[in-house]
Image 1 (cartoon, one colour):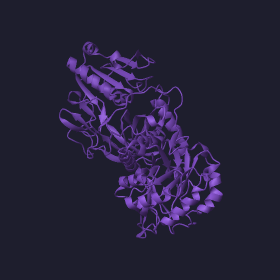
Image 2 (image 1 turned 30 degrees about the horizontal axis):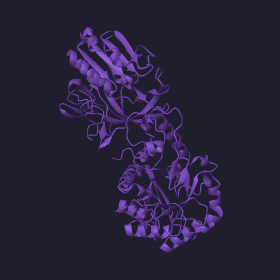
Image 3 (image 1 turned 180 degrees about the vertical axis):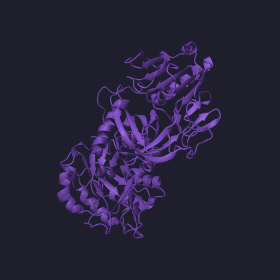
Image 4 (image 1 turned 30 degrees about the vertical axis):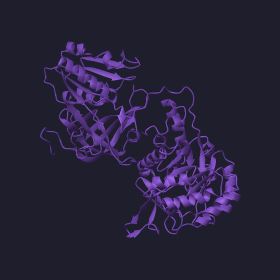
Length: 598
């Protein structure tokens, strides 16, 4: 076993098995904190108090492991090591960890980081834990002599993680007064209390404001403090430099130089009031009623901003028995051409980590068939029906628009962005002249609201969008699939007959958010009367994704690939968006739309 200069073992990568998983009693809300126990094979190194592991289930849908502090560990009679972790259920990664089952395999990288410095045998210390930060300090306390420490535990509500400690004095504070002293930590632990305690040092882990407070009061009384910090991590071993924190000695790696630091060197910067020139939003009171999710686009009112994306939702009726399609704001039809199309030959779908590639090639029944058969069904449903119009030539686009103009479809989405056809499609959306020409031609033959769907492949995307607006577009939808190449490595051949194919799914979302942000920023340079709404497309799978796009300036959004993975995705987005707006005090979408724009 290789060890560093402090005698700590270097991290190793291995696999353990879940021996126990259970909700922790006393945590509020119920089932918000879990204790996970993992057994590692004989010969595994037992971690030191204060260290952590990067935990990653063998079967996982998240990219990175999660750094979790050791709560307790012991070597069993058979030589195996069982390690206990307390996990706060917070996001996708911790949700996976909290939903493991006994026997499940889990990858562990560790033990990582340094350890708590041990006090002398005759010294009395003060230990402080806040929230889930109780785990590493409680684990440390179990290695100390009975009665050699006082323990302060601070929670918002309830208490947990204290059953293994044996302090001289235990003080619990809760914000709501449900356990112990009513109030935050300063209600019980003050500079005066530290003086009276006769402590040689203080050890703490918890929320950053709590640690900043402890640093301050310890400095006031001249007491040494050791503080365990946390930061977003990727590697866990000190190479990615993504988890650095500010100190008086420069930026330190939380995973390697910490997580335990001499508290006197830490720099606790106030929460950012401004990031990248964008000011933090003022706090709003939660709504007493329900938020208004409706949105108006080019004079057409949608009951909510969630639209089934063209090419991924058929004509809506296909999913009618799967979930309540009538709850959607809108449905954009399959891409329609003047003539029926059979689409591309060969493989059409190819999954990759984080998304899906497609080369459908605009297979559709043709506009006349749509008008006679699919449109009446779409119009019988509550969501706004949108006809997605495509073509191969200017003439076919125009003739298709003329036919649609005679129908009762409320809106047309002009598709000049399909990446999977050799004629038409994205070729029209690559340049300002092409996009302007076809938008103007279609605008001339229909009075219906016209949304132009653009490709992210254009090298002058924002200029193309502005040209479409000048030519008569009532809105922009962005972005259609990115282009990529997939290779069948076993055969040494391209997967798709057309070589390139469309790329969609969660992997493209951050890029799509940037494109929406930049497009809305460009549109906002126009006079107010010329500005048009933007409908966001690109990797939207959750309500959090939807909020991101709206805050970046989108008025509505289309959901595509996510429906294949989770048919209830759009319903969950609608419900999650409503709950978020109520909790954050947003009465309507406009109150949060574009809030990160300068």
